[in-house]
Image 1 (cartoon, helix red, strand yellow):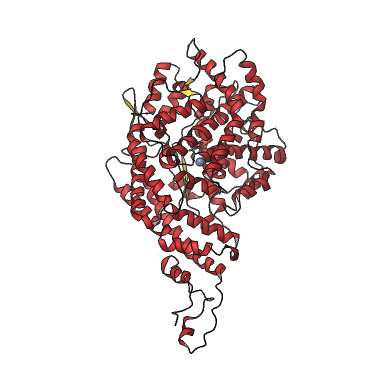
Image 2: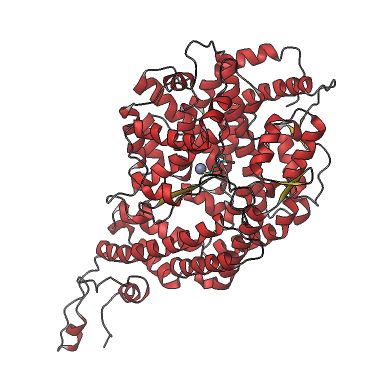
Length: 619
Ligand code: X8Z
Ligand code: ZN
């Protein structure tokens, strides 16, 4: 006699991960098997109901463990004390508990079994189950030891990364200090020393990064992904090859414009630094950014001095102002927890601990506990970053609604999440907006071409860095297993090829310059998110300007437009429960395309070509 007619799944569900789930009532009553034959034929399994019960139990536990992990990570990122491993131990423990659950063999089996019955499930359920399986692949307990080692290595790498003591001219400096120096310093020798100081962290991260590569690849291989890059790309429903084809195409589309900017910058900077022989490639230390990803500080537009205006207003004002902008569109005030628990400003001088110096936004409990970790100073870069981070925060708040299950509280894809706040950052620097807020004199004549040039030096120069250098290097690192003695050589080969930038002096393998970019360590194999986010943000901006506001995309004022707010909130509200391609098509009428971005900067081509007439092009 068969034991019972319970499908294997239901048994596993009860024991493994659905502590609150009841025995599915659609499954035959086990008591019936005790009765005299003939036994009734087994009722068909109601897979949709099974999925619901599984997901209810799973989501409750997932949210609980996620919250604990966030709290521990928050502490690890905001309180880094040299030599004190208390936080690291607590974080590793919380992340291990999370991994033990999300990657448990029972969960993986249940998810696979449920997904075998897709034809009987709702798209909404399928999406959640796939998300849970995607989470499992990052922590499969079939190789629990590898996952545990990876968690430990990640915690250690984060501590090293943010605990590093940068030194310039014999004194400890923050990354904010280094960034400010690179924007302002005019002496090329000093610039080189500052740039080199910013790269001193690289070698300290090398062993950790190589170790992490192995562990990250091994982890996802257990569920069939060939490498970690492929795993990350799969979050978009794309293969690694498809993602690389997309970012290469994007880079090609912006290349003509970048070529003009590159030529322009070589000649203008050579003039500025008094160098007679214009170099074919830009020395990295000439650019106002550690990685040459944003050159906008090269240009001052007459009649606009946002830095000076912001300096008078102060750092706190910037965050409140960004909130006011979102509120003006119809978003709610930020919840009290944001103000109470965020870490928004640099630590006071003499603090006995350090904090993560790279801006981030946190969805602590996948509900209303939202926080940001920043080191805001009153300047244009942080002004934009503040808008960027609040974009994440409002995205979190908007999709944390009863319609969106916990597992789908994510962006339509990761690039959307990055795009929202960057879009607001762009909008918050356009002249009509600044004039409307009283941040710019309405009578001051501003040169539109210079304004557009400054924007291009930010948004366009970012593309060869993000879609070229970063994506290619990580693709090569994770998927092609770039040999350990070629890490820096490969980096500079790509920097030259895509950005047309060279290091000021030879950078051998004793350095590890890619590791100076935080994302290489703690946001691995997903920097293309930002490249795609710029493309999306220009598509959204183009639509908002032309179709909603009926304004020139180069000179908009979103402030107070409830219609713009509704447009953005409608994209945010469903989270990841809608297909990202469908969202873009529905909201803008377009597929993902660099069309809007190229079009936005097209007027600059004429100016740059005229400026560059007779100059040597090297890319
Ligand atoms: O890392 C970020 C955000 C994190 S939420 C501040 N960004 C990229 C970077 O800094 O490299 C924003 C644009 C590019
Ligand atoms: Zn971001």
